Length: 143
Image (cartoon, rainbow, N blue to C red; front, side, top):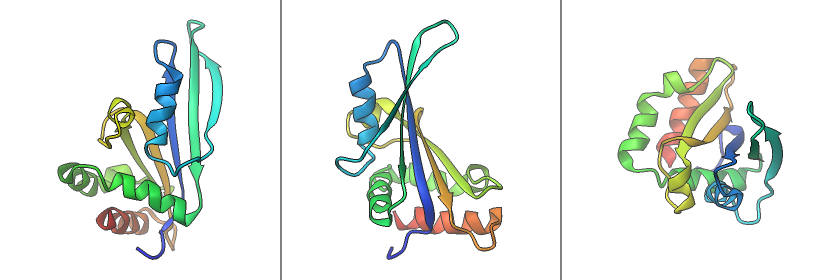
C-alpha cells in the first residue's frame, strides 16, 4: 500500500486502579512505532478511584503503516470478521472503530477483544459512509 487512505489513527486504553500502569502502557505500545509519544491523563472514577487514560494519535503515513502492520497480525478469521462487519464499524462521520484485547497486547499479540480502542478517520471523497466503508475495506484487505 503506497498511500494510506486514513487521516489519522487514535488509540486509547484505560488503566484502572487494580491494573499496573506500566503494563497497560506496554500493551498500547505493542501497536505503536518505537519511541512514540503517549499522552497520559489521570482521572477519577465515580467512587474516587484513580483511572489513567493512555492515548496516542498517529498521523504520519509511515507511522500509520506500523500500526496497520501490527493489525495485520490479527488471526485470519478476525481480519475476515472485521471486513464482514465494516458497515457496523464505520460511522456516518467516516470513522472506523475496533477494540483489541489489552491483555493479549501486553503479551505482544494482536487480537480483537476489549481494552484498547482503535479509531481511524477514513479518507472518503465524498465524505460519505459508503465511500468510507469501501476505503476501509481496501485498508483491511491490504493488511
